[in-house]
Image (cartoon, rainbow, N blue to C red):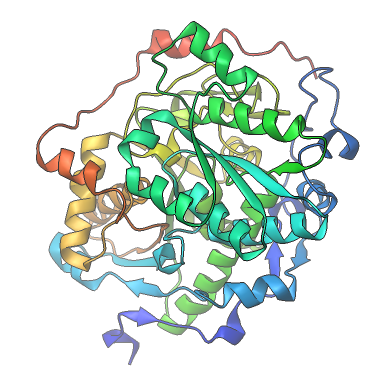
Length: 456
């Protein structure tokens, strides 16, 4: 029967009841997080200006499983469980001997996986009596998700959107505003951090690091009225996404398959962690033989060309210092259309997984991303977001390799969002206006030269 199935569904009763925290199973614990001013280990009190107590507790927790509040699971029912799809038409188009499955998170109301963490973050902040949330967004997927979550819980939402994406993606900006959020192009004159950047470079196209600085400053100076919410990078965010992989495990069991290769795109690491960490637990604890592959833009090659070092999470140096693979907080990536992957660093969990050789990392140039995304959409009928297109590109690489080598791996990847609001990027691709960016090593080295001096 499963030989003819394309779509593998689960009942709503199968929505996970707990998030999985991979910190409990890492062979080596994560490096401590440091205060940006004192460079001493942060305390919960240091984080209170930015986060509510329950979020802080989850961020530092090493419990293996954390219960999902029933109020959060009720909202999850709007789109979860998400479908697992067998990409039979793509397999045929590639002539591959591989089996390809994808977990499709684009069915969420926000169009991506980001709502999986936006809902609990808004819930915990509402419980704590917060008036509103501040945040940044690159491509606009996180801003969309948080604006929806704040609307559900009657919270204000203030979004600093990277300026290049603010102009490239007007419809993502519009949907964020439709849910009642305030959207500001970053860098802006609303914060000291933004004004400082504009004084140095009035034409700055912005970066996630700059937008984070503005959102953090607004929250920190609000006297507790606002808290800050982040859509990736931090441990609690990656943990919230683990429901993706937990569902995928059940669905692949129904399909009678088990993945040999797991692929996800990486900016800060949220959707990659979501699909990968439940399987990585099996790899760490039970010795499961599975390749786990992270894919990033060649124009922002954090994992493949960055260094593993302590760095600021934002450009202005206001956010806590984390040991991570980084290109330097002052790094300003080129204005590629995968705005959600244009971050100078990556989550501490992802960095540790790579450093402990539990995952692999590759980069893909922009033109290959769009070529692969078009191959996928013409076969499967779904338009991938440019971010998700990076995973598609690596999957196609793996599928072609399998064909050449005569192997038949089962490949699972996370199609983390649809590209319905990214059609200007596809239009530019079809017009031949997109280019590849090979970031100069000298520019990377210049940014890395400004890494903070940390001895720990």
